[in-house]
Length: 212
Image 1: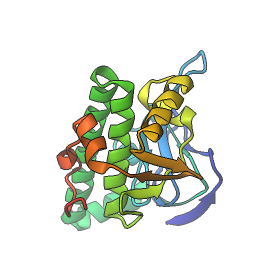
Image 2: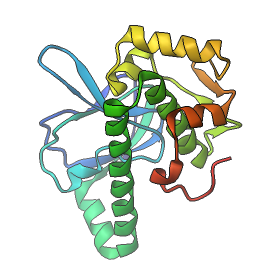
Image 3: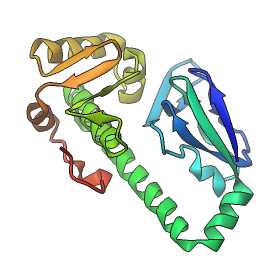
């Protein structure tokens, strides 16, 4: 297993690559994405420490999307052969990775619902709540506050919104004093109001301990 420091917005693996290893994100943020011929980008997911964003490469030979860092990051590259040996020797680890894949699918379904049926304000609110729950579970969020190193463009690419639309929604949430967003840090001042707005229910994240 090799540990590597990466800079912000550096590709970890590219679409159509045939990787021989998976990456475990130890520090920093990353995302899965795809770019169309016209240059438009769709972000499929955001990833935080502890995630293995390219786990599917263990069984699917060709990548159908890319993975890149969003901040400076430290990743551990684990050879597929070592992972396969590990899961064969310790079936419990196979169960953990399978559970991670199932939760990943549940998150994808929520994002699809958000892009198809939620308003822009609800979609952004839902993402903010989701990220808080995930970050709280690994000790990177508390008291409804966390570091949010995402640009308005990245939020838009994830939710199918223009920069102008994202800016308008963030301004509205600030004006209502539901959130404070400054210096790359998000404080959710009115958690229940924000959760009620987007009908956020963390059950799909299958967290190990209740949200505080």
